[in-house]
Amino acid sequence: MSPEIVLMTHFAASDEFVNPVTARQIETFAAATRGLPGPRSLSNSAALLGWPAARGDWVRAGGLLYGLSVVAGKTGTDHGVAPAMRLATRLIAINRVARGESIGYAGTWRCPEDMPVGIAAIGYGDGYPRSAPSGTPVLLREREVALIGRVSMDLLALDLRAVPDAEVGDEVVLWGPDLPVEHIAAAAGTISYELTCGVTRRVLFVEG
Image 1: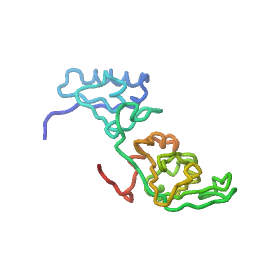
Image 2: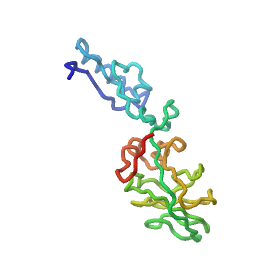
Image 3: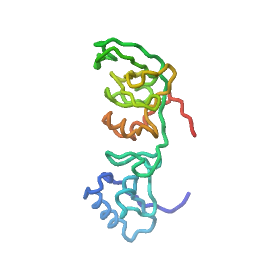
Image 4: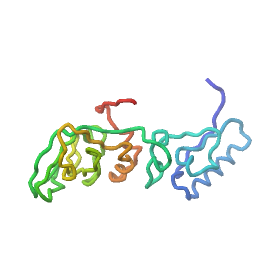
């Protein structure tokens, strides 16, 4: 074990690049550690992007290492990084549903016309956000289709009108390089970190 002590701090608002709180934290840390030996570590992912004065000797990149944006309204690709996670499942059923019929628990979404509805084998028991509303996009045959109705524990329903050639067994992409997780997080009222950390052990993880 190294006897060297690293002097560290952590920022409360580094993702807000004009927030004076971070500037004050940098100044306070510099004053508190002045004259003390040892390397300094201040920067998380957001500080790496927006606060060059906080670079220090060590950086602690978190989300950026996994291709995630740490700035509201941005995606990882906006920062020049590629997403490390892709979440996908399969279409396990397609039903023709009549106009006016409701979809999902509590019937929160009704079919505006006779239409195909797909069922994808994933839900909040797998880590997909239950708070994702109708209209949240998923990818099917490289086209966006909308989630409809409430997310259940094991399943979610999809509006297949945009993909009339969809078939049972087709891959459904919930997020990945072509559908940024940041977009799903924004729709669900959360952050990408929560979604990527929340995928459960029920999901098969494949590296590569």
